[in-house]
Length: 452
Image (cartoon, rainbow, N blue to C red):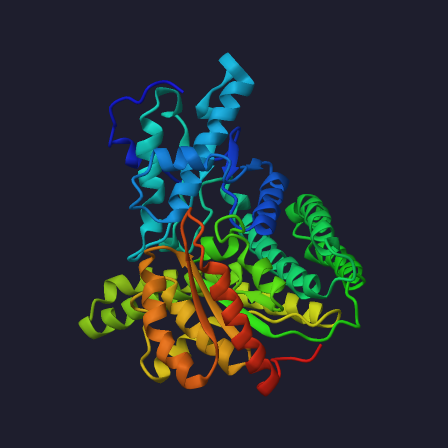
C-alpha cells in the first residue's frame, strides 16, 4: 500500500452509508462463522457477489492502525479489511480497483463504540489513496437494519426475510454443534460434520432462498440434523449445562474469544451461547417500543399531525418483529420433533425480567439489556453456570458484571467474567477450571436444565 495521505473527513458522509450492491463485491467480516457464510449465500442467491473475509490474518495491521483505546473487535475488523485489500491488490495488480468492493460493516446506536467502527475505519481507509473509493455499507439499528437501497426495491422485503431465516438456521447449526460435540463418539467428528453441513446449507440458501422456499431449506436442514445425531455416543453421561452471554462479536468470534466454548467443553461442559437472532429480534423490538413511546408523547402533547407518520412506523416495525418471532418459533418447533435444542430467549420476557426489580432498562440500550436479563433467565431455567464474554474495557459488559454478580451469589449459580483483548492471560484457563469445578458441584446438587 502507498504511504498514508491527509484525511478527508467529508467522506464520513459520502463513503459510509447504504449503497446499491449491484456490480459490486460485498465483503463481509467474519463474526459468527456459520451465520456469516449462510448470510453470504443468501446475498449470492439474490445476485449480490459476496465473500466472507478471512479473519485475524491481518490483526497486526489492525493493531498498527488503531491506538489500543478501541475495543478488540474494531482492531480485528480493521485488520480484516486492510488484509483483504492487500491480498486483492497483490492478486489483481494493475487491475485492482477499490471501487469494485463494498465493505459490509453495520452499526448500532447507543453508548457503545461499535457505532463508530465504520466511521473510524473510513478515516483509516482514506489514508490510502488506492482505498479511498472503497465504500462502507452501513446498516443501522436506527431502522432495525433495513436493507432498503442495497438492491432493487421490489426485492428488499424478500431479501430481509430470507436473510433473517439464514440467521435462524445458523443459530440452530451452532446449537447442534454444541449439543453433539461434548458427546461425540470420535474426536473431531462434530467439527468436520458442521463444516460440511454449513457449506451444504449455504448451497440450499443460494438455491431456495430467492424463491423463499423455506420448506425446501428445512428439508435440507432435517437431513443435516439426522446425520449430526449419529455422531453422539449415547453412553456418555450428561454434563453440566453452561450459558454464555456478552458482547455479540466476542462471544461468537472463535479466534477473538480464544475458543472459550471449546475450553469449557474440555473441562466437562455442554454450552449454549446467546444467539445471533436475539440481537436481531431485540433491534426490531426496541424500534417498535420507541415508536410506541413517541406515539404516547404525541397524544399527550396533542401533536396529532405527527401521528400518521408514527403509526406508519409502528406498523412497519411491528410487521418486522412479529414476522421474525413467527419464523423463529415455527422453525424451532419443527426442529424440536427431531432433536432437543434450547430455544431462544423471548425479548419481551427479557424486558419483563429487568422490570421485576428495576435491574436495568431498555431505555438505556446496548447489549447489557440482553446480558443481564439473559443471565437471570439462564439461572432460573436451571443452568449450572453462566459466562459473560466481552472485549476488555467494554462498557455495557462491565455494567452487566457489576449488576449480576450479587444476583448470582444470591441465586447460588456460578458466574464468570471473561474479558478479552489480543493478549493471552496466564490465569484465564485456571479461572475457567475453577468455574467448571463450581458448575460441577452445582450440577451434582441440582441436576441440569433438561434431560438428555
